[in-house]
Image 1 (cartoon, helix red, strand yellow):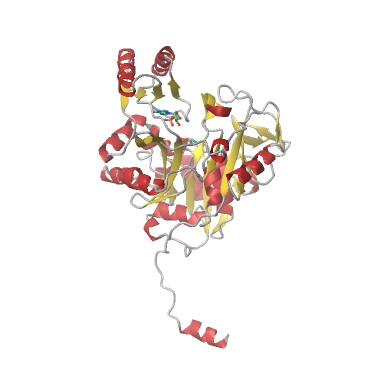
Image 2 (cartoon, protein in one colour):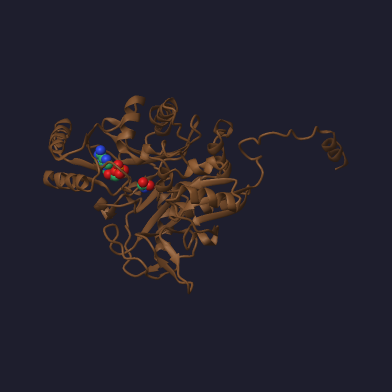
Length: 450
Ligand code: AMP
Ligand code: GLY
């Protein structure tokens, strides 16, 4: 004991200077922007990080209130977000959704001198404009579906014919070239329906993108980046269609699981080398460095890996299954990405096992969700809130199409699935619907990578 005291006193004083990236920065006050289950998952992960001294979520939801101080903000107003970060005394702001990023929230927060996890408005165009993303991918040599931008009706028909010629016929892929939260895409074998969707998007004043159809299972791979260094997380898979068996319309995501037992070995390294790093390098070369979360939506096709889309933020609901498996404390990682020090971060540590999340959706979702209904049984383990609010009398009510993301971690996918569905059985929302087959094809070994 005496010896240790002595040794301690004889050590030189700790150097004063910028903190190292991980493990040694002082306690941080973290402000999370957003109100979905992704933000609830971020808050749960940040709350358990000993580096985080205070946590707030704006505007948050009925679930985030249990782990983070609720603050009011208009997420579409970058100036208001920066002002809130300043007045609350945030050391780090984490922007969840795409809307504030595309509007310039990260720029405004950084201009106020506060580190922010999230790309600039310009860099967020990787998500905000599908044609911008295509240009970047072409310049960076990133494999993706061939695409035809369409500005008018005459071009629409020609583009559909050219796409069909390339793939040997239908299906057709018709996209709204703007933010549509995953709902602006129609994949159909019916040419008339393809034309009608393209016409509706054009009538709404948006440009249309026709794409080559990609076969093969989809993978969501997230990477943290500070604009130079890229650190991939583990791959997850999202269930985009509303109904069991991948039927019904596209949604924001009805469930997810991770890891992917069927993923080819080397997938993450391959995507890092061929997709993520070249994209980040190309953005830096353009003078629009991308720092934050780069989400590669991939298809493992019969012709190899192709990028379906990029997003400029954590995916929802994939975040709800990736973060519970991450053992490395989250705040230091996000801070390192925000401050250009990711190269100093040691390799990430992951928990063994698997995670499954099942989205409980409001009646009518995705077309016309009915909200304002009481939600009960939603305060148990793993129940992340996606679209909930608290009324004046303290009742928890639905406030969005996706209401809950009910999550569980287990020793394997089958165990995580069983626990997640057990938890779903404990929640109550009149008229709610959810898929009963999240992760089932993977558990049964029915997914084959192209
Ligand atoms: P996006 O909004 O671009 O993410 O597209 C939403 C969903 O539509 C994707 O996750 C795919 O399921 C499907 N999709 C988009 N593009 C294609 C494509 N080129 N080929 C096949 N399916 C696609
Ligand atoms: N899960 C799809 C998305 O976050 O865009």
